Length: 162
Image 1 (cartoon, rainbow, N blue to C red):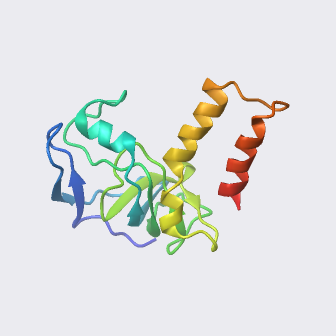
Image 2 (tube, rainbow, N blue to C red; image 1 turned 90 degrees about the horizontal axis):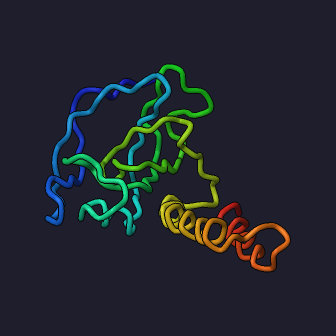
Image 3 (cartoon, one colour; image 1 turned 90 degrees about the vertical axis):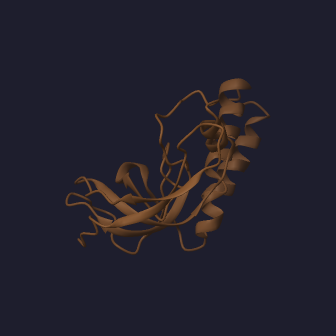
């Protein structure tokens, strides 16, 4: 384990709703035992982040906050109890906030290793849109096994799996 706590990193911060986001230096915090620190190389920009920054999303984070829910990058530090992940692993780390930064911290249960054939850039492009499509097909359209429309869900599944 390399301890990178202390020091600072840069992040894009929403300090005031419906105003431009600002670049700030933030203090790096120590990891919890089951967390990893990720050097963010890409982070998707999506509708949820925009709505949160405008105060129009169903979840309203307390100000100030760092938007970004689709960061992808490389693990640079692992917590004491972390197994199955190591420094240098390429991952995507879905989160509610915190992705618009040089680095982010997430629990390993919410971090996914990326296969070699999936780029970090491509990985960030699918999380929120996949979730939206899934919700539309399952929750709203009541799609289920045996229905012809279920093939659309399978197509999405295989697209993101392979």
